[in-house]
Image (cartoon, rainbow, N blue to C red; front, side, top):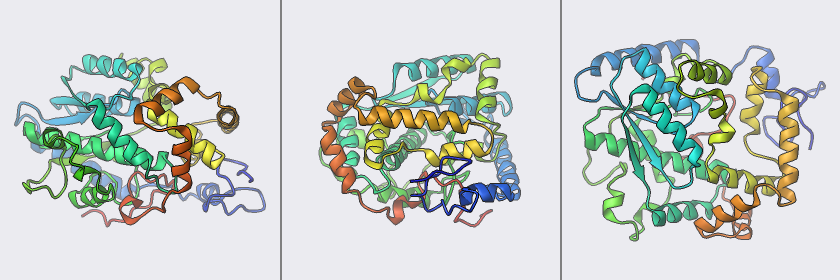
Length: 374
């Protein structure tokens, strides 16, 4: 298996198509000026729509909008923009699945305090959390656990945020997905029909009678019996100014929201993400997120040789069973699986279906399938 001379795309990927110089198609596209993501005209339209939306809600309720916070850099950066540049009265919302590190919760509390945002927390019961993650760990797509469980987890968090906002009478939910997290129908606004389509791809998990009705009622489940439309959900960083990751972290540090040492993505990852990276690396022979890292390398935001060395070291540690073995064992035990069972499910992974196709697809081209503006 060979690797692109400029990024980390491997010959096993359909994006490879190496030329005589050893460059993949994505790197050649970047050289010729073809960049992933939305057009400047579309971004300008989204920015205008966001400004009009903010003007239409500001000051009309006790709370203008609900912002989802995670303890990471992007959600903190979005909250900073909303408070400083748009003067919105916000309530912060956080879903505690039980697998986030204490480090992230400390970041979350610090950011909310610095920005003057009241924080409301939805803590999943241990039994529900174990049931939820075990269900999807044992039903992965062929693209891997990272490409399956992260998607459905984000859908559940979005559903919880929409449900919380609807109960509070808050008309707008804002979530800090970066421009890297876009593609298909997932750009700027998550339309109810797109959310419903993605939700159906989660299968029959929500019909499990073991889920208490009161707990199920905390989520905004599409096509529910009440038929009440959900609040509007926007991803403003798709159309607002989003500089490089390094500049985002520097701004948060300057404003005293998060020190640079606390906003590194590798420090705020939940235990499940670490477990999935370990299992996917054993299964595929290489760590996930190579496409995402490769785009950062093309943009000059990451070092190819450092990431290549880090990926090799990580793969080697995984094969030897030396990659955070205590965390791996503890996390597997909490979801009721063994490593052998999880790897067997990976080997039996099904191909992606229509419902999953556009949900947080790791596609550097991030082509939009929906016509914009609507």
